[in-house]
Length: 350
Image 1 (cartoon, rainbow, N blue to C red):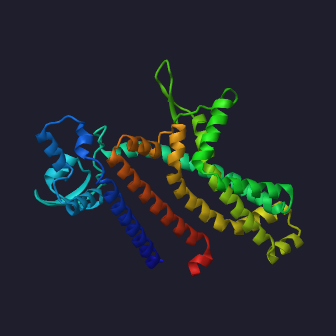
Image 2 (cartoon, rainbow, N blue to C red):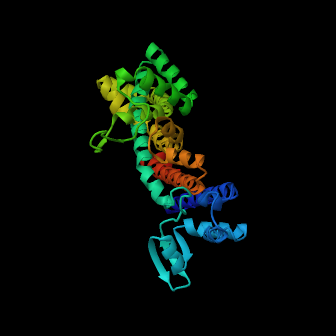
């Protein structure tokens, strides 16, 4: 088990290292960051200070080394750097060199001048809330439809569930999001009460008081959950059909157990393992899929923050968003693999 954990951690570190390389060399050469920070105004002395702060006066390979040193939880910084960048963590050393165990420093936003990590941490809860709501909807409805389709095999219920799941898999989120937003928030808005855009918190127009608006979560969560719902439905149906043909199911019926007890206590319990793997895997996928859904519905999360930053050429926010999303993706997949080994003894034995 320990060797397995070490191997998975090593794979995750290699993936993140690859993402860091791609992100740096993809965005670092675009535009002139000094002009993006200062606009078209600014004297030569200020421009030189900005270039020095962003390491643009150094060769490209040194820029990469400094960038990795900044974003890595383990780095080497002087006391002057620690004070200037307001690094948070534990530091061991002297005035020249300090071994740093810190929060990643993702630079500052070109537009707001705020630390990128603070900007993204404010948006992250909205994305996680949206992903969790979408996954709960997809899991509950998907498992229910999959069980129903398997029990009612070759009936109109089975055919309808399979046909609908194929449509759900085929339709991209940004396309279904536009259709759902138009019909349920524009055409039928007076009946549904849903808004075209909105976040988890709304503000009273008269008092300015902030309150929770759960109705704003319905449409984006439904849109984001369509594809995993389709996958979970098909996986549950296939797994249930395989289990329902096993000898122990026929034995359970022969002992006089009710149909509900056989299906939910015996069949579903043994068919749920591949479905659990799909659920945990799709949760990581939803973090990436939420980008367009958040933008369509105006949902305040990492996706909308990233798209807005990309429109304004605010590259530090975009780079930080990609890195945080990749880290979450690796972490969730790591947890998924561990849970799957704990749930399924066959995986543990192999």
